Image (cartoon, rainbow, N blue to C red; front, side, top):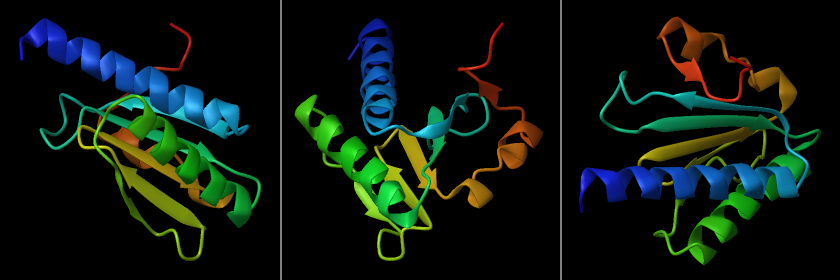
Length: 119
C-alpha cells in the first residue's frame, strides 16, 4: 500500500469512527493525533456517554460501523461494566467512558494534538 493510500485509509477510518460516535450522541468527543508519540497507533479518540448503557452503545456503534466500512473487526476491552471501553481498531484506539473517566490531560502531557480543537 502506498503512503497516500494508507493516509486515505486513516482518514476514512477517522470519519467512520467519529460519525459512529456522533450517531449515538457521544459527548466530549476528542480526536488525538498520536502518530509522533507511538508506532502502535496513529489516533486516539475519547468520547463519553451519560451512562454505562450509553458507553456500551458508543463502543457497539464504532464496532459495527468500522466493520461495515470494510475494516477488520475491532477488539473490545472493558465492555462488561461499561464504565470505560477500549475499541482497538488497529492504528486507532477509541475509548468510550463515563464523563469522570474522560479526562484528556494525560494525552496532552504526551504532546498529542487534538484534531477536533479549533485552530
